Length: 245
Ligand code: SAM
View 1 (tube, helix red, strand yellow):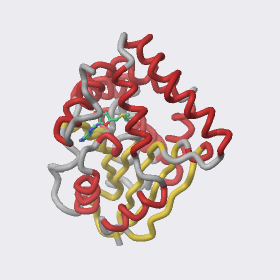
View 2 (tube, protein in one colour):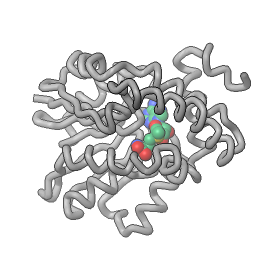
View 3 (cartoon, helix red, strand yellow):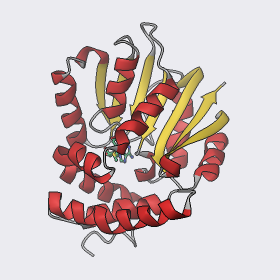
């Protein structure tokens, strides 16, 4: 294949992920709605209500792989516009769309945007009260490095939350979901962007991602305590939580 997704090493993987998101940035929000039939909105709402952002002015959060800003906007709104959120992404095209949306919503004073890699964060130790990452960690080549960085930049008492596609635990739903993700999603991708392959890759990366209990163990290995998770829509997505205590 032209992208050669199956054979590549970890460093090339990042380059391919970047190509995918540069290509889809302008249509990313529309595609999310279509491909999840709108469900990603409910999952993101659930994640942010579990976070329960503080309304204390000065409370600050880092949203990694923040893309077009869905999580950051929700956190700012849930805090009654008191929280500050840094939206971080490796991809300038995604951040550009996010910054435009933030400007339209009048949220720019509550947000800032940083273009960099989740594996090496340009912040001091113990900077943030919370760290969120939604549908992003699966794309990061070295997940252990991203988790170590999450732990490092959180303040003691800080909260880690990760929303990601996960393992479906109901056989019937699993069958439907497989058909949807392996047949419908790449074809929708072709319709909207002219190319099915980037979405084929995204669907495959969902399959390879560790299941709920394994990912909880990875979080604990990175130093987080009280690692737990909540399944959404029968495990199509799951949100993991951990604390830096
Ligand atoms: N969080 C947003 C949401 O839920 O709508 C965007 C998720 S999007 C599926 C995945 C994002 O991860 C893309 O914007 C991509 O650029 C970003 N990404 C991929 N690899 C990354 C890395 N190594 N560091 C930071 N961001 C990365």
